[in-house]
Image (cartoon, rainbow over all chains, first blue to last red; front, side, top):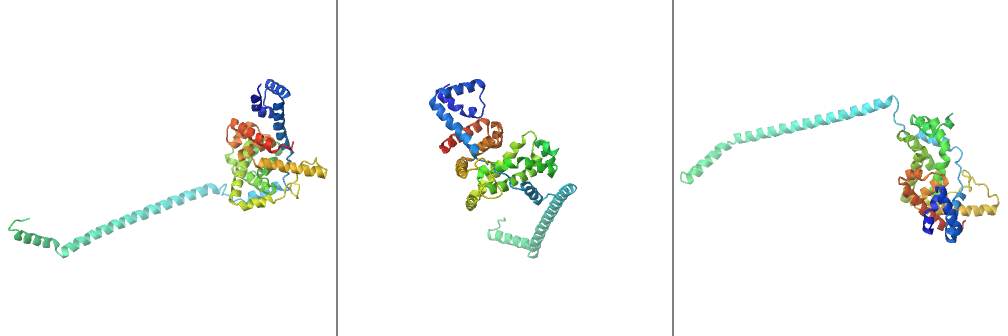
Length: 151
Length: 193
């Protein structure tokens, strides 16, 4: 086993994931090669040192405090009320859509009515001032001026 | 007996809103969750508050839990997300991290006590504390994914596969993360071993 291969196997050796043959080869190399031995010791010792970082204990009443916080959470309607709540939301949505459609339709009808009234008013205007007759007069006057060439 | 029930069985009861089952889950995993957070953020007081949030999230998400996944893997995934959110919040409110620096370390005030009581001699205690500080500093300085991998591997004893699930990456990526973290720790902790 080369020194480079050894370096790659540090983690597997540390986590005890090497097979028996590989582990023996590893240990044998470490015994023989001073440089790898030094590297391996530093690597393994640093990892072992982490164990010196002691655990902390949960403070007294941790569970009770957590359960208390749980009851403070906003509770969504449950049990019997849950389906009622769901149907109520659905019904409200349908009503809102229905009212919206009705209002839209009414506006459209009103707009059409306004257009028709405007057309009628325009027609009345034309009739009151006899514009068509005026145009006829204008036509005949122009034809006279052009020497009998009618338009 | 409730205390002997598996985590999956308890979660099935929590799913139906059973707070007794939830209590057992908290008591079973509180230490692991609190210590994981503590090692990640370095603040014992904040660690308890965040651990409570983790458990509340477990309760809220109980319906989404799939029994195919190991409970602890799922729990540590929630823990990791909570820690990430806390780091983001601290970056946004930089002043609060100053407050965290001033918070008591375990053993300095009531509430949190280091469980390692081997160092009875005061001078030995000082040496031990210095060593703990160095370890904490070295772990804290690791990039987030490396730090989480180290905590889960070294302190919680999770396998590469479980760590990969928590981190959401492949097993080979997890191995690589651990290797780089160990190389960094070897340099940072030189002289401590």
